[in-house]
Image (tube, rainbow, N blue to C red; front, side, top):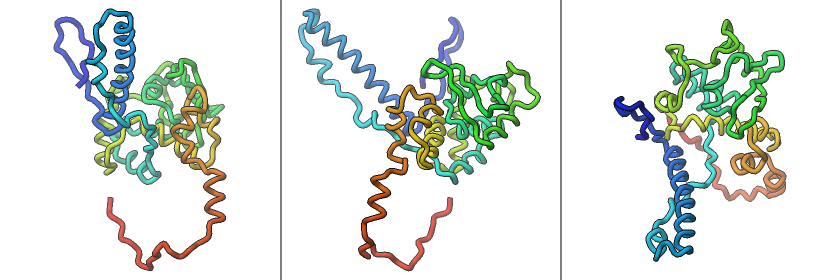
Length: 262
């Protein structure tokens, strides 16, 4: 597990690592990026004559198939099961992620003053892109934020833990795994999948890529299209389905297959 920075003389602490398949993929992708930079530095040193051979690092191969965009998202039935499987204080955080598409860190930093009930938006003041953005809330989203901010002061955090404390780095990992277990979501998904679920849901309902990019805070549509374009209704798919004939070769059966429980 990753170490947590601790004060001198204090017992070394570790934070729980994301053990989901997507968590492992992300760590391997990070290792690949570090390896790329390291190899570039070593190649520069070799070409400058500071190192006699580049054979050692040429043998090191990066992890394969870790940069591929994952389109993992939850179905509407999984949404409901996951929310029901959360412990109460974590449940509101999960609801917030599904209804806004915000990252965990963005939700954890939200204060009551960031919710504008009149405009029906939440302002994310610190985002990954380095600039603030306004997240549009649906009617359901507005009801959630009105509920969790009721009676609080403007500088109070919107989402808090069971003890009233703030959500810190990695605090979401364990409750997310536990909620997935109760909801029978296998393999378990990371909290970030809730953001993908929001984006995927918009894409499948025909929302333009530019609008989704604005909602999620992407710098442009390139990243949005990478993750969600294949889910959007397309002219090509609709044209093929409308014009290709039914050949009667699919082996249709009058027997209805039994569905597994859970």
